[in-house]
Image (cartoon, rainbow, N blue to C red):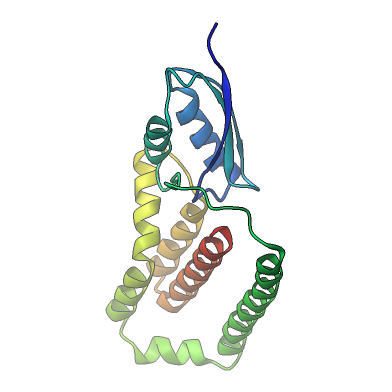
Length: 191
C-alpha cells in the first residue's frame, strides 16, 4: 500500500477562481497525486500524494507551467500578532490611497484636466505612455492568452485597447493606473 501524505503548499499569484482551477488541473495531472484542493483565500493547495512518485520540484514545475503562479522555495513561519496589527493598519492606509487616487480621477475629469492633457500631449506619445505603463500586465495577459486562459487583467486590457481605438489615451492611462495599483496592492497583501 502506498504511503499517502497531505501537503499544504503556498501558491503565489492567484487572484481569481479560474486561477485556482488552472493550478488544480496542473497539479492533479502529476503521477502520484491523489487529490488537490486549491484555496484562493489562503493562496495554498492541499495535496494528497504519494511521496515516492511526486516531489516538491515536480509540483513547482507544474504550478509554474500554468503561468504567473509560483510556489515559494521556503515557507515562512506564522506571523506574530503585532505584524497582523501592522498589516491591518497598512490596509487602511492603502484603502485611503486608493480613495485619493479615485478622487483625483473624478476631480481631474470634472475640472477638465484630462481634456487639457489630451490637447497638450500628442496621441502617439500618449499611446507610448499607456504601452510602457502597462507592459508587465500586458505580458501576463498575452502569456495567459497563448495558453487559452483568461486572467483578471484580460478584460481590463481589452478596455485599454478599446479606449485607444477611439482615441482616448488618457482614459486608457487611467485604466492602466488602476491595474497597476491593483497589482501592487495584491502583491503587497499576499507577501
